[in-house]
Amino acid sequence: MVVRAVRGAVQLDQDEAGHMAERVGALLTSVLERNSLVTDDLISIWFTATPDLHSDFPAAAARGLGIVDVPLICAQELDVAGAMPRVVRILAHVETYLPKSEITHVYLGATADLRKDIAQ
Image 1 (spheres, rainbow, N blue to C red):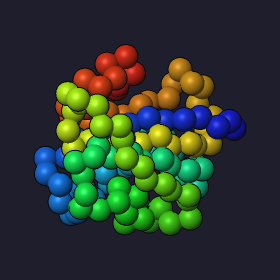
Image 2 (image 1 turned 180 degrees about the vertical axis):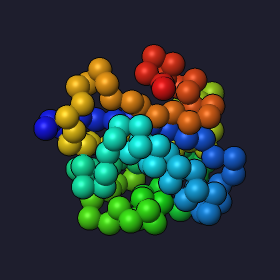
Image 3 (image 1 turned 120 degrees about the vertical axis):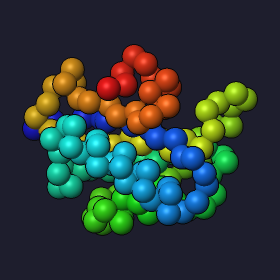
Image 4 (image 1 turned 120 degrees about the horizontal axis):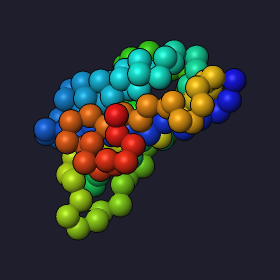
């Protein structure tokens, strides 16, 4: 088993706590499912949110899914002119048997345009 990093992102329609929980929860669930991971495989997750998101911490969605014994941290994404609005990104560190080439990075909806090179 090795440590790998998995990327992902999702765009919110509005800055509302329940909506954030729903979308970030869907992102985390997709990352786990597409990489055949379970909660025990998670080492840590970094969340970033664009500066226009204020309603809640993205990590709260992880806690809502039962991810309670994994270190989580939230930070603000750079405020770059013209950047896609209302985006939450993740960088999850996991233990897996998958080689790097088989890791599935998950960019839901419009965020696939952020990383066309690795979006699945």
